[in-house]
Every structure is written in C-alpha cells, then in structure tokens.
Image: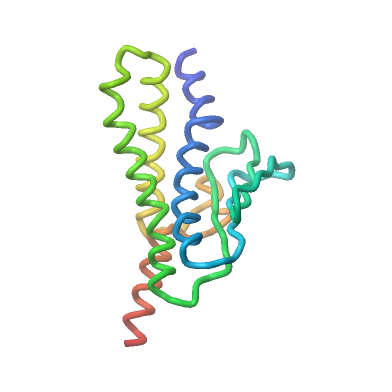
Length: 164
C-alpha cells in the first residue's frame, strides 16, 4: 500500500514540482534575455489551470504527470539559446542538491523529510533525462518536444562550430 501511495504522490505532486522548477529555470533566463511573454506548460490534456506571474503564463494540466515545456519567441543570439536550454537542467540539479542538504535538518519531521526525498529523486531524474542528448518518446513527454535539452544544446553547439 505504501508503494502505491508513493507512486500516486510522485505522479501527482513530486514530479510536477520538480518539472515546474526545471521549467522556471528556462523562464528565468528568458526573463532577462527577452521582453516577450514566456509560457510554461505542465502536463497535457484539455483542461488547464492558468495563472500569470508577470510575463510568465503558467498552464497546469492536473494529474497528467511530469512533462513540461517552456516556450518563448526564440532568442536571436545563439549563446542565449544554449544558456536557455542549459538553465532547466541546472535548476533541476540545484533543487536535488538543496533537498539533499535539507534532509538532515528535517530528519525528525517525517512527512517533510519524505517529501524532500521524493522531490530530490524526481529532480535528479529530471536532470538526467533532460541533460542527456536524446529523443523522447510518448512516455517521457514526447508529445511536447521530441528532443531533450541536452540534444538541443548539442545541436546548437555543433551548428555554431560549423558556422565558424
């Protein structure tokens, strides 16, 4: 029963939190490099909860898992594009390390400690699944973007090398 509850919490709470922080990494870079609206889409489906945080518009599709995407009109500067794609994985690994550091301080608070462990693992997996250059399938969120951040960075870097 504990495994089932953990699985349900991972799919509905912890993985979406890790995904949101990852996507905020992309949005953070976009905020400083463009004056355009930034859109974050978490999950997939037909009905979304929408909220706006300044220029950031967030669409949340409840109970739809761990996929997400941040989109903004593309940057003209190639280096900004690379930084944009790199920022999501950086936010993911920083979240994982932060949760790890907080585990000792929360050892006597079972629910908080348990939640931090789950978010730590989800954000570490998020980091690995986005920094490794690969194409996604439908299970990993391929309905949004078929390429990981790592693959997009690699393609931009190789394109930059070819032009020089």
